[in-house]
Image 1: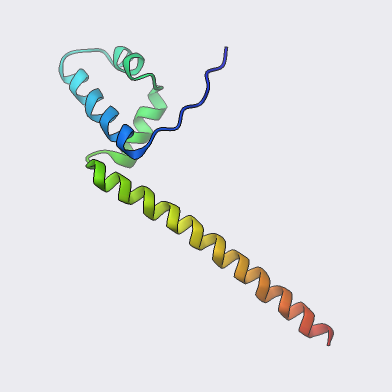
Image 2: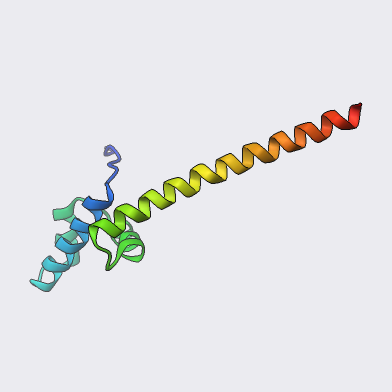
Length: 93
């Protein structure tokens, strides 16, 4: 049985990290925390390394910057292809 993959927003991730810390401090086991949050152990550790200690607003800003960076990288790649294509065309003339 495969579960549907669930995408979490930055707010949800920060909230789940806070909840996990509270549950662990209350004496729950890691397995119980993971089951309550409905995530896997690798997901929790990845979130901790990426979002650990951030506030919700900081996590949103990080996500916005990552999206903008991805958009700009795509734009630069397209421009590089255009330049390469123009060089090929001018060589033929």
